[in-house]
Length: 509
Image 1 (cartoon, helix red, strand yellow):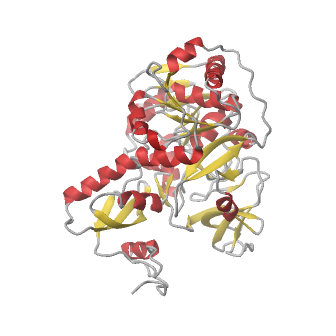
Image 2: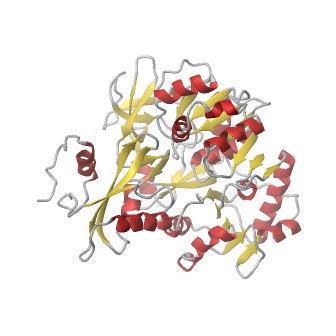
Image 3: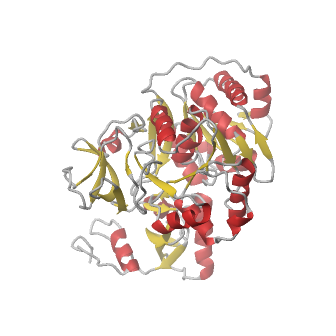
């Protein structure tokens, strides 16, 4: 692992270093009573301890999860409470957010803090790692035993815990080889944070199972910094997201000329549809196209892709991975012909398919219909077997490649003292794909103002996450609702974008 810190620090770890450190960490977890099936969560920025902890957790047979470092107390509480995590690995800066909710997490026994000493129920990472043995007998697991879990947002209710098994590594290993075209001498950079599934599947499991030398960059996005990392580490294979590519495009074609980017040989993109302009731009600037691919948190690995040997059709997600059967089906699960729009569906099972939704079997069943896993994405397949993304079948918002459930944002909004009701939609945006727009009605005594708007944005950033706040807020008298009281986001979106409002028969008077 070639680690590039936010403040010009850099460190290198051999595979032997990672083995010894993760063995030590596994021994520390055992000392504090962690056993097979327990949940151990990580809440850290992209520092080496995150990667060491993740590997150590899965060696004990416990279920690992990584929480995005931008999460606020509310987002943390939902995930830590639902999972029943026993230990949380964090640092002194992020720990304060957990302290706010600690008394509401009865199953969280310890916090392990990477940059402070042991005190009470807090475990000092450094001192325990010094004492721990580097010899550890890895727990023997069945391929179907749980390996890691991640929470994903839906249109209703709290985030759902998607559980993947050890079998997932097989799928991630092969797709890493065949889709991301990894070879023995590659230097690989996956820009995704392990708080999202790409950062685990292709930033830890698929990459290191192939023995890939990997670059990790801790800092925030900056075109100059990104190009300098590629130049310094001589990155050959680069896996990133359309939002990042569009932000690089915005920085212009002259900037990359200041760096030696000649090491690059293969570029891939994931997270949301990659627009054709980004592919043409990359060809012009890097002399290489970005290869788009499609998958989800629930699928655990790449299912549809533009392979190295395939002709790219700009704007298409590509063709199914060998062994994967994909189709476009109607709402009753019947296959539709080429060219028809419908639900993108996959024939189960496949090795990295989610095993369960944590403590929610009903939700898990809802993903499957008539022998298909129905993805929630609308798409079409052309005559050549290429798949094309059209949009989400539900209200889930895709902003900068991350899925945000409108319900979660609405729930946080109505906790603001000024807001009585809120409806949230995704609004198309040239850089982020979509941004969150909130329609809010105010309690008596409050008036719309720029100051109130700024206060609401800050409130949501602090409670949920830095990427989950509404970039646009519109103050309204009332929100369109069904007779049963459900906010009609579809109507809000239609009005915002000037689209037909469709059937309003269930709208209350």
